[in-house]
Length: 137
Image 1 (cartoon, rainbow, N blue to C red):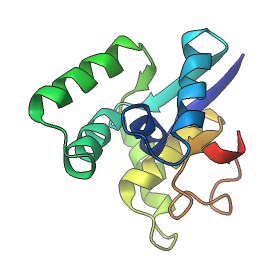
Image 2 (image 1 turned 90 degrees about the horizontal axis):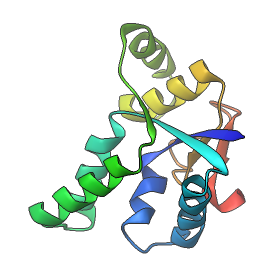
Image 3 (image 1 turned 60 degrees about the vertical axis):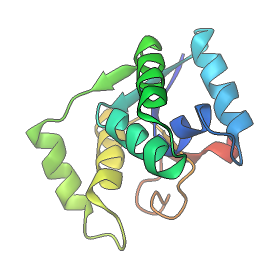
């Protein structure tokens, strides 16, 4: 069974209709039908809330519903640890790569799993060759 690391840019498309939302929903459907496994760092929940609050202008009650739905999916969420943070720091020499973006790459590198993203600007295959863009899956 294929296993992928999820980026927030993909998860947001489960809640907001944007370019490639259909592909994100197909990925979610495959997960729900046990055709693949999805893994993410636990900080994805904070990024999701932030994106829905400030990007999609969700109300607090809608945010609670979104968070509840996200946790009901039972994705594999991986917690922060010192070794992973140090690997994240070592990636920060890349141009315009923020710590939270580098953290997703560090986790994918640690687990040697592809990172599925829509964020072509910050998640570049030159930084981590296992990056897979949602529109290519």
